[in-house]
Each structure stands twice: as structure tokens, then as C-alpha cells.
Length: 323
Image (cartoon, rainbow, N blue to C red):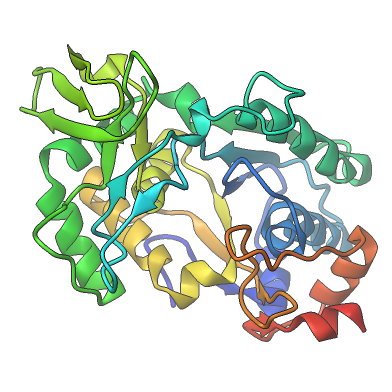
């Protein structure tokens, strides 16, 4: 299945095909929540860039791409929803950007995991010295035009986002609560409250349910939490990657389809990037690995690379990993 001027490249066979097409100097992107690093997310974040570099070397092409990892600090793990309606969310707590480091060794959660991630990604540059590694937080691109377009859509046109979600994910979304992003309280950093926006040059108003304060500020002057794939559309518009590496769950749940549709709605044309899709790695309980489910598992890098080099199945059970 092709998408825009790019295409979809599935698992080991797709990776080998993609490597035949690259010049070597592309922008390769992957995104992740800034906490937890295990076999499940090592596949797209660490292993597939290495495997892509290996295949390029087989062609005699030096991997010198810019490898961009975006940290989704403008997400949150505090979104409650009615049973059966996962996209009718009510936020609570704080976004990752403003959560403390639970170990107390860094200024915040994101600082902790960014330092950890830099260490984990070191093998990429050790193997391919010409690769340029960049880690960028979503909060660092707040003022970029692409992010502002995504914020405008989510704040002023939530029904448009809802329609695209319903069409692509084949889900039902209730009339209320209907929000796909919200502001962060400038006083206490809570995301629990009511965000309203008149559009255009009007202020974003936030009434905080945690501390009781009310604020009205320009859209560009606030921090936010965003629904992950609306955030993804913003990141595409800002960085225009040539290749985006997705975990297999993005394909399974059609969220990659929504991302493409949202980009087209904001940009006027489909994304031109190539989509490289990894297998889903299942935890010991047979489910997709997730910190919230407590089913995380890990493997040494070389064992994980050895497995992924030949996997074309959509999901890999953990017993196979430990064999």
C-alpha cells in the first residue's frame, strides 16, 4: 500500500527493500514516550536503524542519515475515558513534560529518560560514525509553524479531528467529552481543567480544576498535552522526515492511517515519507508490551537484532524471543 509519494515497508522484507532505495543522507525519524525502554520499543527506536544501516552497507552505501528521535513530552498517562470510548478523554495529573523524576536523580522525568536514551542509542553511532543522532522534545518545537497548525486544529476544530478519527480508526466517539489536546496550567502545571479557545488571534483560556486558577494567554505562550497522533502530525510538518519508523501496533490499529489523513488535512497533501513498520514484540503474557500493563521484558541487543533480521510476521511471542 502506498501513501502519498512514500510507501509502506513491512518488517524484514520491507526493510531490505527500503535500504535499496536510500541515498544514505535521508532524515530517519522515530518517536517515543519519554519513559521505559524495553524489547518492545527497542525494535523501532534502536534495532531497526541499525538493521537499516547494515542493509545499506551491503549495497556499498554509507549510512550517513540524520537519525531524529522525538520525545513525546507533550503526552500524558493521565487520560480517563468512559468504558468503550477510549477517545473521549478527560485529563488529570500532568503531562510528561512536568512530571518529576521518580528516582530523584534528574530535574524531571523527561531529563531522566533522555539521558538514558542517549546511552542506549550509542551503538548506532558506534557502528555507523557518519550517522547524526538528534533527540528533540515536542515542547521544543512549540513555536514551529507545523505545531501551531496542529494546535489550531485541535483547539478550534475538534469536530474535524473527530471525523478523521472515526473514519480511519472505525470507532465511535461521543459528543462529549470531546478534546484531543488541552492546556497546561501556568500556575500548578496540572492538565485537569477546561481549555477553551475562540480561534485566530484569540487567547486560550484554561480554568484549572486542581488549583482553581484561571488564565487567558496567547496560544503560543502555553504548554499542552496532545493526543499522540495529532502530535505526530505536528512533528511531521516540522521535520518532514524521509523515513518514519513505526511499531507494528500503529499499523494494526490503523493509527498510521489517521496520522497520514491528519497530515493531509493540515498540509493540503499526503505525507511524502516512507513508512517502515516493525513487528510487534509481545510480552511474557502474550500481549503487546506496555509499562501500564506491567508486562515488560528485555533482551541483549545482539539477540534482539538477530531475531529481527529475519522476522516477517506481524507479531513475535516472547517465548520465541527467549529461545
